[in-house]
Length: 306
Length: 306
Image (spheres, rainbow over the protein chains, first blue to last red):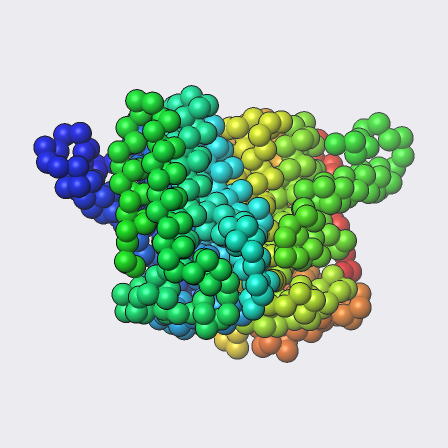
């Protein structure tokens, strides 16, 4: 990675973080552009690229790269992990937006993939994006095979029935039903939290740390993952579609339980703040590792307005 | 694997093959039953299990296990590869049967997954089955990490844009259009052939062989993969739905180009016989390796009636 190292930038921490983030985002965008192929027959490559390029906050890739930075890990492997996790996230949005799921027409400020390319192509593009994630993680050279296997293991578990896909199934089944806060938390831990936590753990896997630090990183990832969803639920009722780049108010419209409907807006805001504190406290247990970027990402997750 | 070894069965080759196959099929079925979880919330596990258990010829798993047998490979790894490749195949059927694709109601003699569980659950079940394939390939112990990475690499490439998903996109785009034989072959090499060939190569990866033998196994896999599709196209017009366990005649109904529409029935039958010969010729280049089971699987692919 060519991303500027905060340690060599002589400026206040916020400026250094911004410089790191902009360099990291550019690096991820270049890698996505290079690794999501255009030259696939029958328009499939075009639909895949439309679904993942030029949009999104890239929070998961940033978590991978910041976690790798914390443990001074292998940058080439981390960049592959960053792209892979974003491909999984992007495919889930493509499928989630389809008529049989959330039936949404706007995503990242553009018409959704099925609106642009048709439902069949959208389904295939999502399927191919998931496969591509594992392809990106298993290059012929450049990443140690044992690390490839570890990254595949983390990603597969976070994406599948015990993680994201399982959470989406609970989400579907809970439309129009009252959920306890515990049930809501369980759903979001799977649906959004598992992949965000896996992003952190994949970055950490690219370097070395002891078991106590690894557990602390897992706690950090769990707290940030849940905070992300709580804030998402808040923004869904407080922001306009134009700011979000996706349809605002759709949880209410679809009669889905959220942190705001279950806790109320103020309690949801307090929850988000508590989760930020928990995330920062976890980083405090990582000893001398360079966790500054991860701390600032936790702030960004909670303070964002889209 | 506890499958009986043909070498120790004192009977004619066909009986020995049948004994091996029945033992292998039982082993694969037990592994699928054990590794596709039932205890997943919101009915997702039930839909996944419905989509992959109790049905199908299990040709891909048999190719994996027979190829592993040929190179005296690691049986535990091969069984995982067999299950993983069947999960990819089964997920592709679940998605392919959905209304936005082939819109089919019958598969493996049962209502399709979306008919039984709804479209949203079918899409999620397919997505989760793809992730599970990579989860099965990356256990915490029991399979060398380098082999895990190699198996993931082979499976991801065969399942994705350059393989199965890419072939399905071409298939979609070619409805109602005349295709040359070369274009039809390209489509089927990707859509069906890539995963069948990968099955052979994954089995081979579980053991050791030289580069010449590996190339021969790849040629065998390509020939069997194409033969499978040619025979599929023949059966689609010559068999009843009840025999096939899926809707017969649907290629014609959907106005899809097939080997029968492009070549005619008799030429398609000659093509299948030539591909069987090519597959057996490739095995002849594998030296002293135990390729008898693979040879008989090639016969089974061409001689089957469903």
